[in-house]
Length: 425
Image (cartoon, rainbow, N blue to C red; front, top):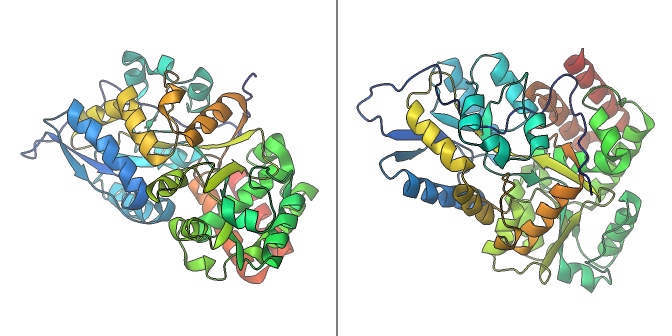
């Protein structure tokens, strides 16, 4: 099946899953220890830290003379890390490389002149051939590439506790056809005595859930049109999605506002919830808990999104003024290598960006994601920086959080219309 790619932002293709320019503008500083690299991430704990550790293991094998300096800052979806990074960049004190979500999230850094063009490194290391051509095209900004992917994640995944559904007479292996059918099953779960049919967490997880509902109710083309102005935020499709989202909130845990994604997912792991909508970094949590895919848990594309892959990717950059550029380029080389991507993605639950990855090397869930990425229509995640610039995403996040408290659908739509107007002009 031919892969379909959609335009996601007017005038801006998804920015860079790319590597470092081989002859960047700056140079290593002489600080007495040039053989080190400070890597700034939000992978500070849990399954994310496991993935980072696996990647560092490969880096240490490939570059044993370079000291790895872990500058991780804890905080769900990188909110705390991004704030700390902004302060450092403002003070002209960049790390050697930093994690960012590929796509529109990088546009602010590019506009501020804070990232180096990494296109020549792609050329010299054969990465234009190693990564899919369609992905390279969408992850290029004005002919340049600004970051390198460590992975590809899918954001429209519903994680299912098999026993919880079977106890209510629901077949866990058959996904509901659409949002209305899923709401019917959620009602059935609640009526069976499950207090929390759908687990939910803090603000960014709420935005990811609404993002999934928008995809389900608008379809791939309609959803993608939200980001270039061709789909109206005050149209009937968005109104339907807001109504469905409000209904879903009737089935979530009462303490959701204070839970990060892993605590919300733990409700599913422990059998205290039937479902959770989360990116596939959640796979590592099930593996670490000793659960078996297809036995204790399973997954589907979120109801109504079958045939669509909601894309995001973690990527790494080369900042202007990086103190240890040579070592940073070494890190980016490991990020892009077949060995680095295999070690990292098997541990983290995501899939490699490289086309030469062997599917049979990966566990069952990742094999399903690799197939979907190769066949499905690809759209960009809002909650994870691919669809909208940071300021637009922040406005939407605030409005979605407010809706969770007041359930005023008209106010949410008005706020989303206003945010789009400010972003698109």
